Amino acid sequence: MIQFVQDTDRNLLEEALRFAQQQVRHVIEQHPDFYPMYTRDGRWRHDGETWADWCTGFFPGMMWIFRRRADEGSAEARYWQEQAIRYTQPIEQRKTDKQSQDLGFLFFSTYYRWYRLTGEAKLKEVLVEAGRTLAGRYREAGQYLSSFVSDDSLFIDLMMNVGLIFFAANETGDKRLREIAVRHCLTTRRTLVRGDGSTAHEGIFDIETGEFIRQSTQQGYRGDSCWSRGLAWAMYGFATCHEYSRDTRLLATAEACADYFLRHTNADGIPPWDFLAPASRRNLLDTSAAAIAASALLRVGRLLTDPVKGHLYSASALMILRMLCEKHLGKKDKKWEGILKGGVYHVHKELGVDESVIWGEYFFVEALDQALRQL
Image 1 (cartoon, helix red, strand yellow):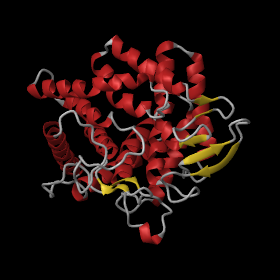
Image 2 (cartoon, rainbow, N blue to C red):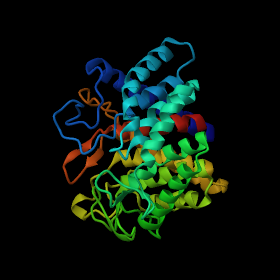
Image 3 (cartoon, one colour):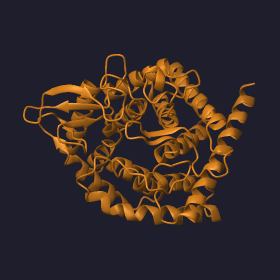
Image 4 (tube, helix red, strand yellow):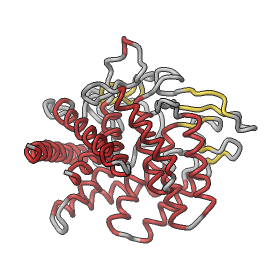
């Protein structure tokens, strides 16, 4: 029975990955050198606005995953490597972008995967420089990396980026970089992660004294609610930073966030866009948060020393992926250009609501890849 379930899941996940490759190829062919962000009525190309330039790495990031899974030396491997390099190289110029809080999103999905594949020293140099640039956002008074909104603002999203500073610190032996990364994690843990494992999107500080003032939000329902994508960022980000630092406090935080997610998500594992959204918006789901959470649960489960709880996390991730594959793929709509329907970008700005979003696509593909390697 167990083997039958595993075979069924494997077939389902592999079929979803094939569909993902088909959709990515379609965008490459129909919209060459275009970096999608969110769809409008299922189409990637439109004149909708963007809130910030943080998504460029996700499209080539999927190509790097497809490249790693392809048989070495095959035509498929050559195709995906050629396309991945083509879409990755233009991102290099962002390694000195002092305005961006999201260099981790840009470079972990691209140059890091490229570096892991080839081991080329020049690729590591790009990653290290990007990590040093990101560290420049550090505010000594409050001991945090400031968001792109303002110097007094800290985002939970930054937990997905601070790993790039850890990478630069580990590769260079720079103790100051490591100190910045650790302090940022601990400040985020103290100010944005609540006692029940829920998270705030944003923290506001006094710039002069570094005093933490209040929790706020840009994308959640309220400052005291729990925006589901932010919670997923926290699960994933704290686990990643634990891998680099081996600081058990960070793994414990990732576990607390994962437990909150599992206690409060819907029965099928696909969460509402905010866990405390009012009844009128409670039915608005976010499949991108589900995809990130699935990848995070697989990561956290692998790190836990408790094998029973680790299995619970892995099984929960597999259930989420099964639901995404069975209920939320764009396969039945021939005009839909995305992979996952039902993603959310920015509710308040009415951008990419109930659409495909490129980070949802990337983390869905990443989670599929992780799960298949564990089955």
